[in-house]
Length: 414
Ligand code: AAL
Image (cartoon, rainbow, N blue to C red; front, side):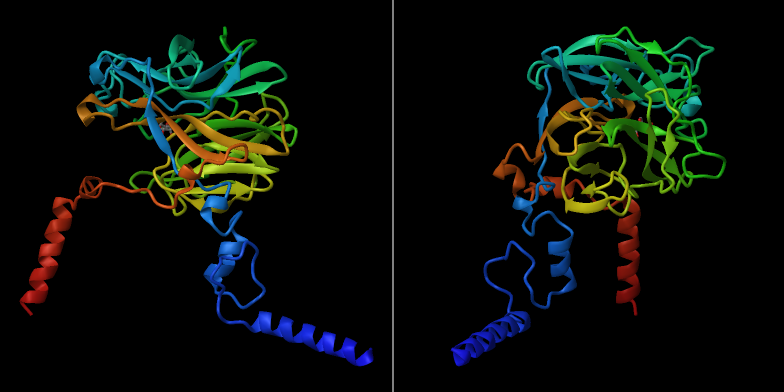
């Protein structure tokens, strides 16, 4: 009996030693991190992602795009623009979205040529409009929600880039309020807020700055863009973007401000910026934390990130063709959930729908599978297949061609 136990122990030790020392990685990718020496990349594959394969990673997805019906763009002549959609909410048996709406006599002409009626930028001289839908594909425009306020009030030049909060059965809209044409110094504005009892309004302007610019020489001293509120940990978590470092070195990062009341005061996180990359903000509750689409700009653009505490974000996946300025349908945006379900669709915008002289943006629908509620294998494929013309559109510039010619000449004349 004693000999038998000793044999068992020796056998167990041999198996363990063999497993730990095994150098050859198994043919079937293990679901759990194997107990054997692993390269840094392989360790990362287990430690940093929700699963070692993208198709099992709830925060990996492809994005699919569909034209939306019901919105007219004046034959794309640049005088009508819709952009920067809010997150989408479902109320009164339908979906609601708010967005920047511009209807001006000309397309944007830049800050130097801007007047009281000629816009400097696509989001200059704009109002916040809204639309409703039963299916997310066909939208019925309802008209203005938040107009430009009278001349003496904050934000009189343009109100844009809105996002919605529902808090204790009332509605709060946060948006950029410009008191001068965008582009004069930079794209400078603070965040204003209006509130209503119903998503259909009427909206009352709080007529005060709710998220102020930072003190002189700090990263968000000039612009607070893309305010994006969620309810998390019993508070309002409002993410925002700032453009800093000055033209032509503009860098864009994202910060967080939290509050106990929609009217503020909002306290900016001491760790701001909390995301080092991304252009417009797009967040959603996911499990016990917050996930973020980190779209263009910065070292970590084209990633989905996750913060277990809503503050300290880590890369959760690398993705392609992300929706710009995405406003997803976030079913649990305001439920204070500790078990966020994720997102499957929303609206985003294309800002290059036409040539520059007819510049305007259009709203489009995106679909994805960043949700624990669905499992769509088509969304989980690991590469997006582009036609050659998509690559050839990324052509070398004249300067680049000249540089290459010069380099060749140097080499061949040696
Ligand atoms: C967008 C957003 C903000 C900027 C401008 C309009 O992509 O980041 O809203 O101010 O561009």
